[in-house]
Length: 561
Ligand code: GLC
Image 1 (cartoon, rainbow, N blue to C red):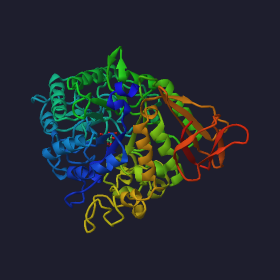
Image 2: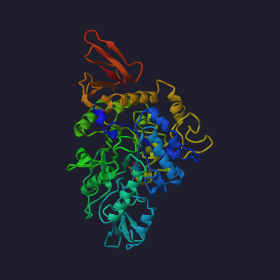
Image 3: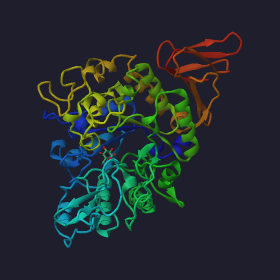
């Protein structure tokens, strides 16, 4: 079977843990590493193969850990280095792989490196960040060196420092200065840090805003023309800042570092190590991150199109077809419906659980690596939190003057707190995240009574049970975790149907995304249902030809034909 030869990262399912909101073991209202360890069995029961843990390193937490102040230590509210080691070991003991989250593009402005770098133009770390002299208006007003905009578009990418009387580059937020990856000492230090974590057994990394790491050396302006990059609207074409040749080459350098740790045994912590990039760009650009001029780079890249796509058969079909065409085997697409930055998928489909079940079926049966965000498996939804109450720094930049009434109407939420509320383990006031008398760092969602792991674990009709069933099936059937994908012809526009096959193992998936009941004719005389979104999905013998599938509105079936 082909799956025996396939490395683990090709056949796995990834589960994103957002540590601050996963489980609080010490009653301070903040999730922590011991809390994750306590709940590892939930992930085993769910059937995922890999956990990706969002940053828990020392940090002032102004961007909830994506502003690192020391890559080699753990933020005290999350635990200790020993806890990080225990997390790796306990995950491995259960057969789970572990990806940590590396923020290589920038540090916190409170990182001692930046504090030193900012202190003068001549200190030892003076060039560890991207510093530049600006320009001056005739009246003496200071201007940044060029027109580059931050990733958030609405603000410039340069920040003024009074101490150095120079500008520093900050591709995301002002307190996240970009490291200068052209500096040999920066590279050595960062590669060394990466080796340290790999040496502790980490199976790989998710790479935060990797495409923004290296900009044009000559600081030439971006083209002023607005553009779309991987579905993200930009006020200028990021031709000098995003996905530069040097950044793509760095993917290859990092690959060489992680490959040093590939052992002979294909076991967690001993086998191949993997890199998963958060990169935005055209398929051509994304493919270059995987292999450039024959040189291997990242193992996988996120494809975020499903995060933005409106629910619909045609839209999804087109996306699946384009993923298949743009990332044919041996490449693998990734499928992402949610993460800690974007609206919850159930909220995106208007809270319709039937649609969430269809999405779960597609996610777990398509060709590619599925990525699940904590709480997605129990149907957690956005929890409205007004902009003025946001912990998230992004609304302060992008929605400074937005009236709350207008904010409320937006489908894509601007305050990322809304998708980061505590993971709902039980129906208790503290949802099993923290003690009931403790105030969690973000408020608990009101839907906790039905949307919790406890209650859904014992309900065979719950979304959690469906996810478990689908992921078990995916792990068992080579067709699903290692097979090819062929789109099948459908008679109705509301249907999506495809066949997955690996050798003689074949599985068929059919989904009805329409508001009317539909019948799918399989064309064969015998078939069996392996999984279905509900009891009302049924197989029946057609009057003339073979087995038909009765598909109520917004339903799906996984079939053995
Ligand atoms: C990524 C992270 C996001 C973070 C940003 C800056 O997009 O997913 O949460 O704020 O990078 O590090």
